[in-house]
Length: 195
Image (tube, rainbow, N blue to C red; front, side, top):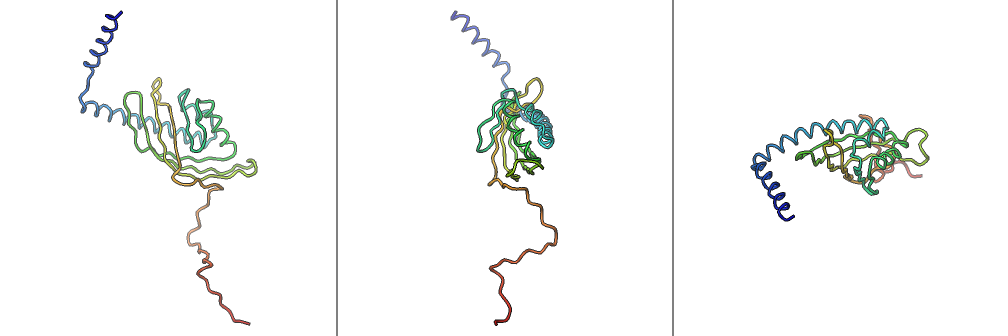
């Protein structure tokens, strides 16, 4: 039995020696893999944005691996596609959501990649939403762990947080150009004659 363990260890060591890369070769390979992964991941993120806008929670959850994890701020982790779809559906029932994802860095090594980026999200309460439903306006950053499964990049872990306090209430409409600002009370003087 000991001989077979030794033989197995020797085969693993031999395979490692034959496939050993120089640091330069490894960096060149990873740069190439990272560029290809970034392009594929960007395409998945366009689907993520579209499914969010269309209110398709199940389709959005399908972008995750079977046991993928979604880790929103100040909330429990959703594990698995069914839990992720349930979380997304709750939000989508009450509001129309527009999400913009901006990927910044992707580092891949074989079938695994780590990505960082930023996002913006606006949520506007739908007509007929439960009373008290407030809109959101938020921007922040995220980190995602991806695996290539059967040739497709899928999300294993996704975590994000805001850059500041999340604004609750319907997103504010931009002020019209040339609109005059109301004077501040502290800077105004009362004029008029005393009686």
